Image (cartoon, rainbow, N blue to C red; front, side):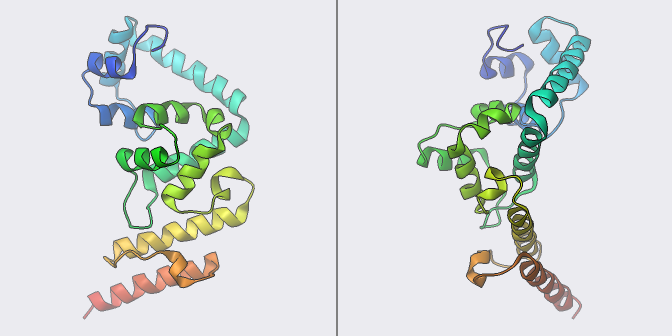
Length: 205
């Protein structure tokens, strides 16, 4: 609908009086648009807000058929990383740092481009460079995004995130899990539990 009305993301943001961060967080699926937002969007598109709900429902149904389970799974994993993933230094996702990482790989993927990509996971699958940038950005096993049937990558990524959360939650200085050498997901989770237990024990004295 935005393209049909000849509006850029920047123009739509101005027309709806939203901040850039607020708009793109919702376009990327991090949070939902509120009713007031929908009414503002409807005003920008010169239509009734109910028409936007109908359009969203139709597009969601079409996307489910077009993407299939693999496209949906990839989109879910990327959204999980963006909303809850921690980088090796304990930091969360940030538009600026991700754009810099993409730029170093010769790709231009800023907030606007990323919002479009997340709305069309198939376009991400067609360009493996984007997946490589994402896994390098979060420093997780590449197959987590490039090979969705690789259960080992899923387990290791989950364990890595658990380890990083333990470090962050306890106030420990960030440490790369690879410093521990070759380690299994089960062992890495055990390290995370030990860190939490040690922190709780210290706090009791």
